[in-house]
Image 1 (cartoon, rainbow, N blue to C red):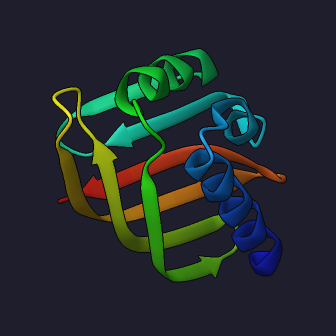
Image 2 (cartoon, rainbow, N blue to C red):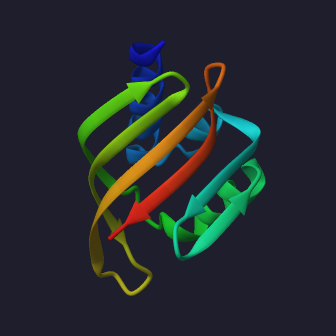
Image 3 (tube, one colour):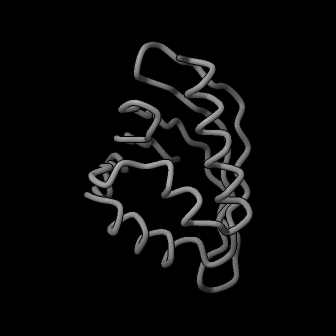
Length: 113
């Protein structure tokens, strides 16, 4: 299961870097919940869709450094570069903890610095 979950997340990251939000969202449960620790909680696929439309003005550049899987959980660490509305690029380090339900992304706890 862990290799399958890794492949699912990497497929999602590839979709995001191509600007294919719907391709990524097809990998999520309808009731997916994303928590950006200390910032925002998104509940449901539609909330994530709206957040992506607003946040990913241009496709982000995601670099995965490590993937660690156990059971229904997958931890991804790396760097992400996002284009801001003012045209400046913001680079951040991240640690994402994903929980899978079956073969779909059901929950994210994201630490972004």
